[in-house]
Length: 518
Image (cartoon, rainbow, N blue to C red):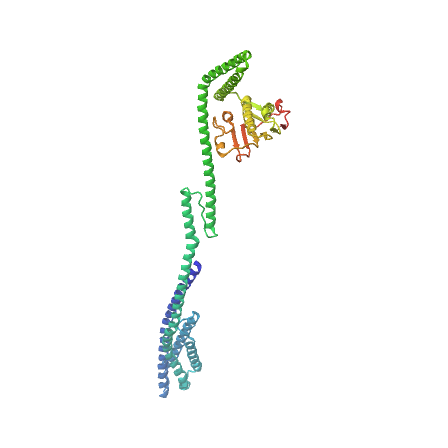
């Protein structure tokens, strides 16, 4: 469209300039014709004068002077040259597409003048005697005709100049109308071009700029939409794609920040528990041991008294025995908690080495399978080959035991726990999957916090998974937990660093195929 506007304007402008140049050239040529035409008239008038003088000399019946004859012949030659010059000028005007009218009539007149002069010249060829010169009166008609035609030349030129004004008036009016039409057409095209630029460029770029400002202000949910299918749309799509990537990166960073924050909080909690365990566990453990010993002693004394008493006090003795047993159980339970606290405070100083893991996990599975409360559950160990990691064997067994017992405790009768070991390129992976009670979102967030437990019966200290997390973290590993919700089971995945070069001659890993324990 812009090309059409430029073409229309250029055509109008160039046409006007070329018309003006053509007109100026035509006027210049007409101006150069005028003196030639006047020269031709002057030469013809001179020839007419010489002819009349020659005729007068012949009529006196006296010999014609030679000078008069020569002057007449010379003047005739001058007229012929002037006619030739004028003819050449007219031919040049015709070749240049002259705007000042048609010159064919003038060319015909010049050709006739030349023809008449040629006839006169032929009649005079070889005639130089006085008797012959007396016949010169025969030249009067052609010379008069040539003089008459020569005198019409300036008038013809003037007439052509006069008629050119009328012809030019029609021409320039036509071009004025065409110029106005071209200008209006160009203006309409320009308006349409402005509208298209507004629709195709300005408005989409405006949306793109406003969208980029919204994204820059932090609104990563905003998506730029344009109504075009050109490069601007591709730019908008690229920007939307970039915004989505930024959003994913931001969400990932936010998630990492949340995870790191939870880890820091958990580490602080673990450190606090460690200080508490180191400072208080011994002080609590000694009184608890005294209470348990006293309860046992009282129970033995009650047995002695009960053997000598009558049946009347038997009921009271039974109640006393029940209370003493409860005191013992709770005292030993508190003693177990303090021992776990002491274990928790001592973590991190054990020696680690490159050891096979399959044997350690197998020992844990074989130990747990004999516990009576897990008889109705299905426990499966799966390992396709030797697995090695840089760990402390006792601490790793504690990790495996905590995860397996935690999974078994979440099962109902007939539930299933699957334990699998795999060797990756640079780490070993322990995975414990159960189909038990599962975990809620809140439980997943607090599962590794000290003293946290969501068991309905209130059993457990809430330190097992905290100790597990701390052991894995001290070993430079990672522990992840996943659950689809309450009643949908849970998965614990532990990754521990391992050497890339694995040995296959470990005695503990040579005879351990997949095992199923019920």
